[in-house]
Length: 333
Image 1 (spheres, rainbow, N blue to C red):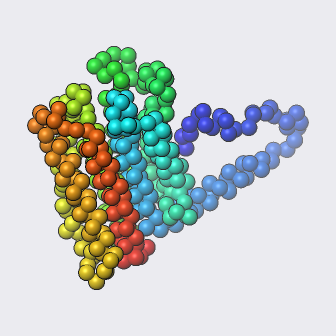
Image 2 (image 1 turned 180 degrees about the horizontal axis):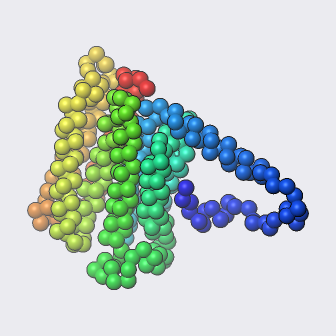
Image 3 (image 1 turned 60 degrees about the vertical axis):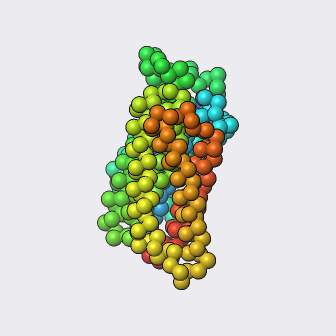
């Protein structure tokens, strides 16, 4: 498992030399070796018994990572351009949450019902995710004075031309991290469908709508700042279409229809109300995004759009939580 060197070095005890008599003593396993072997055996034993819903929840957590990575790229852009009152600590919160999820996906958690890697492919993909995360994490945590210096570790000197604040480079690195996360999600999905669990597809799409909402706002800012506007207008258009397709499609899904049945009373009305609020904020955000695509980005006021996007994401996270609780009760494990 990849670890972060600075953090690990502080946690490790000083390295000591061999025992002076070790060459003359019979070879016997150290206590720490026995403990490590026992833990590995326990992890492997647990991995072979992960329940279908635990694999689904692991995929849901991975989906949250891709949304957080897109949020991080948006926050970096806003912070570097001094927009939206974004503070450096806002980026730290996203980094800490991704760190937490990665740690949990590596180990699994019976307490939180999160499966560990269900197979060797998943373990290898987690290593690829860690490698993609390192440069994003370092830049996200870098102080304002250290940001550009650290960027040179990952970006060729000629690359930042036309990108003085390295925001496009950061965005590309975050996109690479998201692609690696989505490969892991495909592996979880393939493992999940073998169990005939009814929520595998729902888990596979986890985090996508909130990721797209973060991306729409980020793309809008890139266009308004005149940073590669053609490229980001294409991304913006694709993000709008993807959000619309998923959101409209989910309204027809049996799971949603069952969740808002009149017999469910206040619970059903609450879910329907969340959808109405999401619709309202999405309509506002989409209208302004269309202006930017049409070459009228200078007419867009970013601060109200940022509020609409944050409200949308907040409502969507509540929506996913209540739908998840309903689904768990309906479909069992």
